[in-house]
Length: 285
Image 1 (cartoon, rainbow, N blue to C red):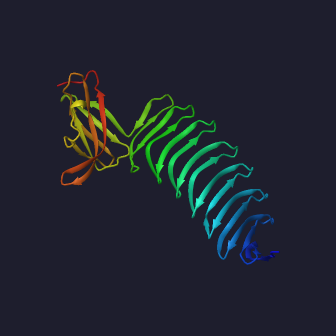
Image 2: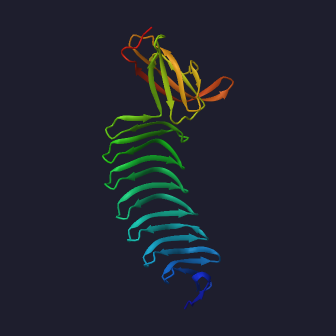
Image 3: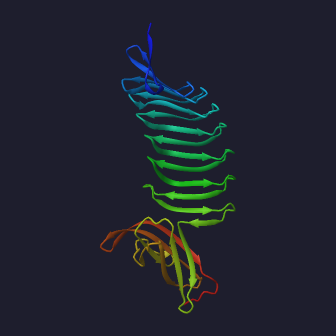
């Protein structure tokens, strides 16, 4: 029969020998109730560690191997409702993790790979309706992410490159009106020159330069990006003048984000087409 021998250590810790293979360390609250107990081998956690609320109910259970989290870890609310449960390998979270509120309602589910977000991540309102949806690749956001109002109407759309850069976004109010986007355009008409002044505001600029090509979209050569090349100002606002030359009273073209390569060369990292109606009383040339 295995003998259990308990020793009292400093600071209220207790040590219980488990034969020659290891021991259990216990810590207590001030009232004497158990705070946690962990299986140990040498100086490392090795086995199960259980943490308790002061009333004795279980707070969390973790599994260790040679001092590192390995296996299942579970966390509970004080009322006994599961908060979340995850699988660990060498201290790293892996697989699907579901999170619940104190009433048992699922509010988030996320997939991990070696402790990094990897795969689909979703969150939910208390009603169960989808609150957000997005994909990740080893911690990096990719593809299209969406955030919703509780009535399922779209609130925010974010589009990321495969490198995790924010390529575009659109934000909407509860009525479905667009209220913000990555690039915004504002028109003002010159008093006498007949030029239309276009203001472009970059709310989250990624690259050093922008290029603009104006003309009929179906005839624009996408390789021509140096028609108008503009360096961004410190406040990420760019002003340039365009002269309307078509009878349809609108401007259309393509805006490019450019990564400067030096020697008057740049590579296109993003492009966005625009077709904007000019004010009815705009002068034409």
